[in-house]
Length: 560
Figure 1 (cartoon, rainbow, N blue to C red):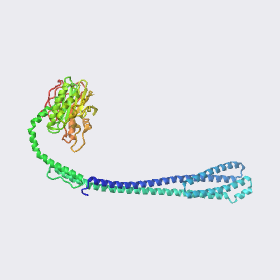
Figure 2 (figure 1 turned 90 degrees about the vertical axis):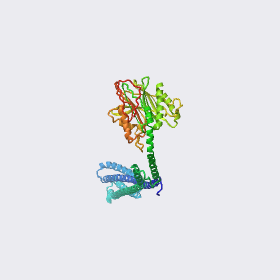
Figure 3 (figure 1 turned 180 degrees about the vertical axis):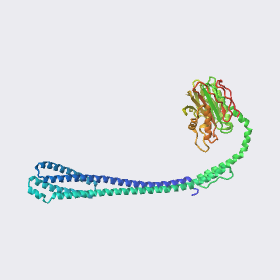
Figure 4 (figure 1 turned 135 degrees about the vertical axis):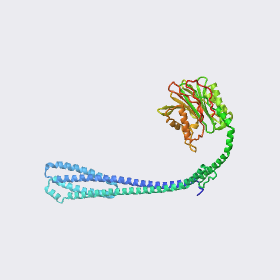
């Protein structure tokens, strides 16, 4: 069983657990159905017995009244009362007949032979009483006093009445006893059902420690041993091999850890060579970085801006941004993200930047600029780029944009401290690559509007996809907005600083991808806000131009 896969072990354990659960479920369900069925049967029988008892009580009451009125009639010496007594006697006799039929029908519905026999015996006694009572009434009607005395001498009607009344009491007691017995049976059923529930719960509770023991033996202990070995590697002990005996899945993890340990040793061996190569290539790195540096951010009345770029590796980034002053007074905000990092990605980024600048100065249409810039990838079949070109009219706030597979720029607004998204400038075409070089109209131009008090934010996916190493918990747009909502005032520079900081914190201090941000805000007043100067992350800030200075087309190139 030592080399049995963890999946098979868990499957067997789950199968056993399922079988036991099914068995317990069947037992519990059978107990419930039996109890419920018996309870329903007893409930129906109880209702039928209650109906018989109710009919019996009504029959007894009518019978007693009829007997009393009959006695008053045959013993009455006042001729004036005779008609009323006769009418009352007739009404009561008819009522008794009706109740008699009802009692007999309900006794038949109950289906209890003893109760049915008792009811039939009772009705026989009542019929005998009726015969004796009719004889006495006949003699009473003839006016034969001596015959009446003879008919009353042995009190036959009274004897039959007492016999019938005793029958009623016996039937009442029998029905009461049956109801008590049914109640005891119901209580016994409840007790049995509770006993089954306790048994099922006990078995389930016994299964829990068994499952926990197996999980600890099969999973937790091997993982604990592997964790200890990895902690030794993390602490600098790179000479002790990582190994584990256990389920093949965990053994595979240990093997991967051992491969990583060996790779670390190889990387350490190459570190010296890498540092020497870096020192030899510093002039090239500086030149590429200088070529990718953005123009100074413009100074426009009623507008403010800020931007930053944080490379993921060294000094070079595949990301770049720029804000270009066009001849018609508009400004073009360009943000691009070239796949990969390092020198080669930087060279491709330079080519893309130069083509976009030329295209926007020749014909400032975002879709045409992207179509021209895609020619960079003629010989770059394994590389691609996402890009946003947004041309902003500072007078009207109109934004014309084209988005080549880039994360959608956001139009934000701060209301009562909460930062909300007013609009998203989604993709208007595919990524820049060799696949769409000769596709007419591959990119289109969209429009948006920046109202006073709103802000355009263009960023690369390194911001929203920031995550701690080894997890998939990305920061996302929601995480950035939550951080921005805590700012006392939402300005472009505050937005850039806070967004970079929250991305750094969320990724554990080490960025996994280049992060680029450009924020352009339209003020609610006509007085221009002091602009920020473009600077890569980590560079010293350049001098701030005054709010009254003319827009500049010069280049600010931090030297790092």
